[in-house]
Length: 65
Image 1 (cartoon, rainbow, N blue to C red):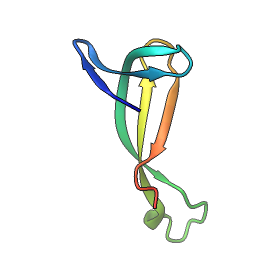
Image 2: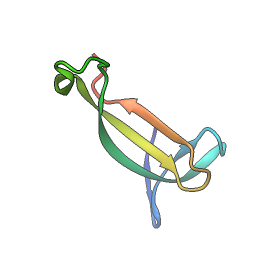
Image 3: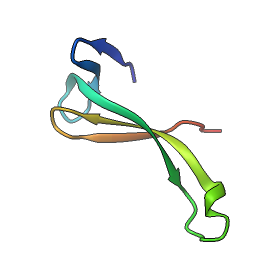
């Protein structure tokens, strides 16, 4: 996953488009536990990138240990 700065934002390879396209990128905290008790302790950061051409969205857990 290589991100490059373009005049209109960040460009990354899109698997659906098959080429480098502009993407929206953000970090989201997602709860991984399905249990209500202590769910607030199971939140993990994910990098979410969305292709601005086709809308394909990919997420990657940031702290894979």
